[in-house]
Length: 202
Image 1: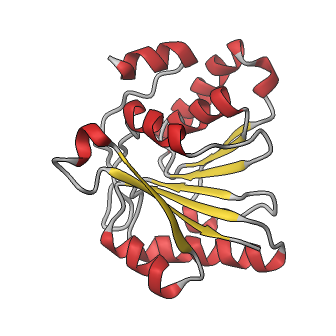
Image 2 (image 1 turned 90 degrees about the horizontal axis):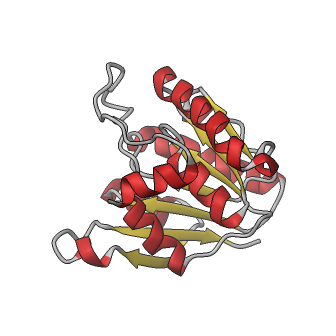
Image 3 (image 1 turned 90 degrees about the vertical axis):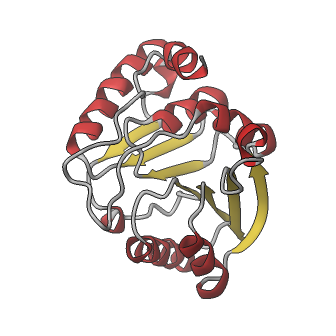
């Protein structure tokens, strides 16, 4: 099973429960992106060691460690739930036992996504339906403000995208659809089993 294989490879534990007591109309429960889906995404979308990725609603940090392991990219996880944040920090300690050079390239913050201050270096932003469209729109506004202050190429990557997210990007922002990556094994039964990548060029 790929879930256990990759967790063992990365020396982490990200197989989690979706139920937590702070779930609300605005913040959705934790569910990690399937490793099978990550394999499909990164066969079709490459990162570099200089990219800075932000995962909003990162949970225990699965995506952070996966992309750092394979691409040596900088990666920051933003998580509102304290329990998952603490689990991510434990995973970071364990991950770095086998990835000592990555110590300064992975990071986690425990705060509201809309309060995260976009770094001038952040250029890739990942969402797996972590929260409501109201919060998503605020986060995207922050991304666009950062773009105005420091223009650079940016991508928004979404897994299992909601209609609200897609419509907001299509009609309310300068981001445009660059690519779709279907999870072939799952897409035939559920057309939302895909990644969509929106981009903004400077």
